[in-house]
Image (cartoon, rainbow, N blue to C red; front, side):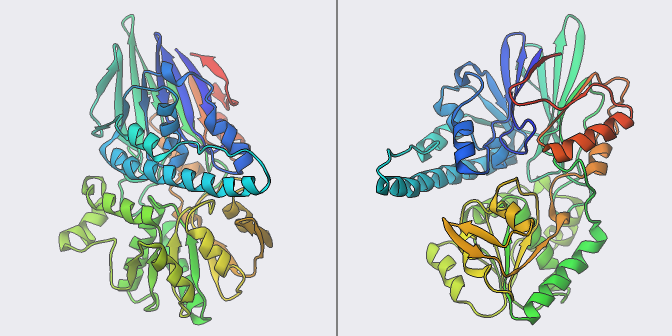
Length: 465
């Protein structure tokens, strides 16, 4: 068996790992690179393999850095099945179409600028038609149900606890009377987070491909966060400010709404309007509502048993139209706007940041990881002058990060995820989906814990195991 690390190697976006097993080529993920356009456009357009030779795709979850290049894969010749959990399939139906719309609009805007400079137009990475065709390839599977993907190769999805429908993937390979167990972590979630269940650990593995996004840190404990969030909201409201929250439309937005709902019911935050201003988040929330099989016990006990919608309450408004979004600019009273994208690279959040980061009464609240060179990362790192839609803006508002809301496991939680994978059995451990700053300290932690053959592969590297 060969493993080619064709994306998400020594970086946190663009995840793609190609397995070649007895001549069959199985692709784990087909994610989109995110960051500066000039760096990512070529990476996203050009694959390190022939898409037409891929037999099947296994997808761990719907986030765009794991799924977002699937329409381009299909456009470039892939014609096989794409296996994922049922909830992931439903999320991808909306997310890939939304991504296609963004690519089309981005290309249209860019070509206007290129035309003024006498430059040739560029095509979008993929179109809505490409996304529509890609969606036809998805096959939804249940958690914990083994199925044969090709002769001698069985697949099982285990709940990864990262977002709705996310999965770690167990790949069992039978050959010459022997069985090899390969685990792919996808993105690992966290214990005791609201809404979805805890990660279901992969176990008894011979080979592991594992994310390392937060391999160098430990997150804020859950008992601290409700008070911190409530205090932050009260402080900004008291000074008459707005809270602008760049948040991923899938997972982070629903978690924030859930926590704000509880704080509002407990009278711990003021009676102020809360807006979810993201068409994708609105549609994604509808998907959350139809997949209660993914919910944890607290969600069932507090909300479902009492027939209460966890994603809707009195002060919460979901905006749909552009006109509704624009009208928020005229709202002078304190309020909260949650809008996509989490890395502040596209979507309505850019308009809200442009209109509000110049006012010191306001707060830009970041609730997750941001890749290098993204607007979110620049603001989180304290840059005082940033460019939005090509224009310079001075940052005067307060900037705050709450890492508790991250859906990624931290160093200790990733070690816990490996607790049923014994070092003396595991022959190869590959760290992916992590920048060098995070992955290399985690590599040292793993080696100190007794894990051998821990490797941090480079882009394009192929290893035979």
